[in-house]
Image 1: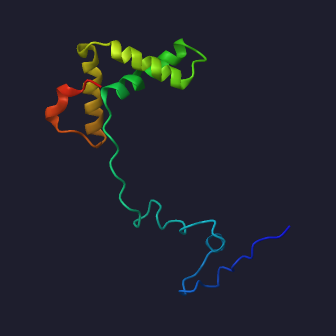
Image 2: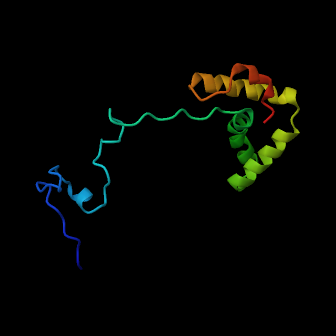
Image 3: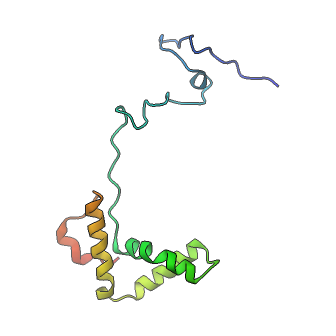
Length: 121
């Protein structure tokens, strides 16, 4: 079977830099480590803040799926959303507070503290 010609590792690119076989064949992109976890990696943006609904789902999904075996994940999420909508603001508050604590603890992007009561997700 025909193979693409490989460039030997000791051969260089047009600019004189060494070329690895994977990169020469267009299979590897940047050499390992250039954009990995090393010093040259660009800074990662913060993850989004967790809201009350997400915390509600995290805490209740496993039990809900155990209680309804064979239920598709998307259906479970839809039904958890219905349960969330049926909760009163006082019933939602513990989830919203816990979500804010989690977001602060894990250095997530958050809204200013003045918006705490507007978590009517």
